[in-house]
Image (cartoon, rainbow, N blue to C red; front, side):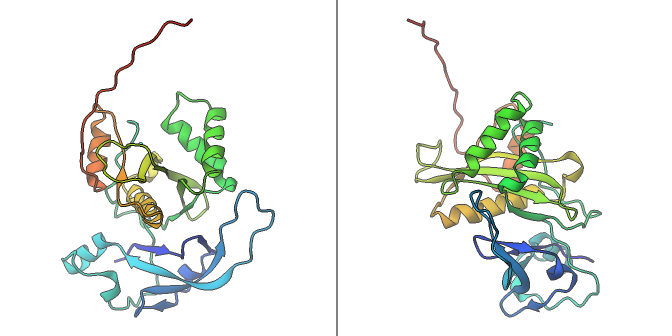
Length: 261
């Protein structure tokens, strides 16, 4: 039975190639895997830094542990080595703003890479944003994408790629310092958007995207992760609960238009 895994390089680094998948060299005592990593190239950089040999943390998905051993209390670092010639596979919205992608489709074990979005894949991200928010034009989505990529200190976007490199999902978040409903701290990580293409849903991709944002937020010192959803979006409500969000409060917004002078 294949195991889905999450491979997480050090903050600010990305995986290069797939030799780590085809020929894995594992360090079970530290739950790490040998891999090639490179620094993320900022939008202003002309030449990316060359990759270097490094290690990344490897974690077996808790759902798979439960299926194999009948308990979700076993940690990935306590697992015995899996001797198999098959490479381990990595797991990584019609109703808006969020669609149900929290389930797992066991027939689909193709690995998915989740990584921070850069200027190189901003057009793919903009196309997915238009699928999520079709009332906005592509030019508006491109401007929004460029704006978020220019704010690395308080905004982040993660994309999910298939093995062929095609972007199939994204999650975007910001660090909000103004008041966020239901929160008591500042700054607060806020999930601004989440979308997974229809054929790729129910593979756990949304859950992994959110986990990446949670790790990013923790690095900023955030202790709360917030979001919002329209009251009539039942799918969005159930997705948030499945992702571990708890309802904090319900608010009605009012508007009164003033005459122009």
